[in-house]
Length: 457
Image 1 (cartoon, rainbow, N blue to C red):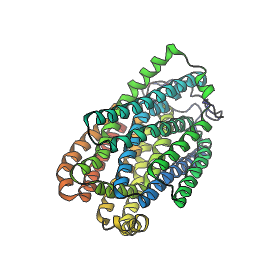
Image 2 (image 1 turned 180 degrees about the vertical axis):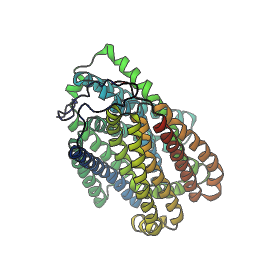
Image 3 (image 1 turned 90 degrees about the horizontal axis):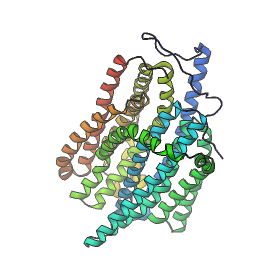
Image 4 (image 1 turned 120 degrees about the vertical axis):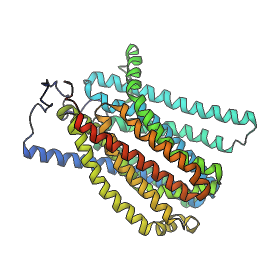
């Protein structure tokens, strides 16, 4: 079983006393060969995180792909809406618990960190129960007012599965916060393989449905958490007197991340619901298929965020916030080149891939797929910028970009979606991604120039 202590090769950071004019430096300056070795290790670790995230995204993609082939477009539209709600809960968990733990755990020693991890685990459980209760209440209210309850019934089922999926997210955050990427990779690959085999077996046997696919995803997530978290070790040192203090600490930091993430999420996840307002579930299904294909680079986006936040957090403590921001900007530049290549590839071959994977009923939307792909590429460029701003422990500044982008994008969507349908959704998503990236880029460049010398750790 894994424990939640910092590995021996990553000793706790010792206090570094700084003068008003001297930036913080590592206790032992790195020599050139050491720098090369460090860069090589960082690249290897990042690739390990990417491999794990790719596997998880692959099985989610596989579930959606197989369901799109066996379900009606109306049923698949419900699946798209349901998974959007699962991911919404995940964003809340990451914002209020996972990211605060990832950034703030580096300021605690081994014993204190175990206590902190246990408190975060309890918070995660309470949050999941709250999500299930919320959707249960919505379902009951819908029945009480006599509104058709098929959709709310699906949402209640998805909320139960989300509790287990979110437990995996928390376990993964703990492992990556401590840079234990190989343990995370081994468990992730094993669980993803089992999930994929289960989905394929049900598909071949004719037993695949939204319920069975969601159950397999949830059980696989629970198995990952059980094999990577030592619950007895984590929960044993719980100190009730400190639990509320840690809840308050997470809230004070995470509320700003949640505000930014919530607004950003609303600016993306609201579009399928706006589409349903003017069109039908079949159109929502088409939007879901095109968004899924454009999200082929999502594993790289999520892996980068998962690795960059703890990595840049340590960098900020050792070399100062200006250096951490600079590293984020350099990574964003490289990501922009890769994103351009991805967008061009989807523009040339996207419609063919859509027809091959999802049948001809989802074809003839090549231009919309190009716009969705461009939006995801800009989102990828924004990731290292947001990771750097998060790592320097100034999360308040993260909300400006999503606020501006969401207001503009939703305002445009109210005109574009009724008039142009799927293409209107694609343009709205692109506007949102452009707004977020532009604001965060400007903020990062300004912050790098004006960053004060960090306080001693």
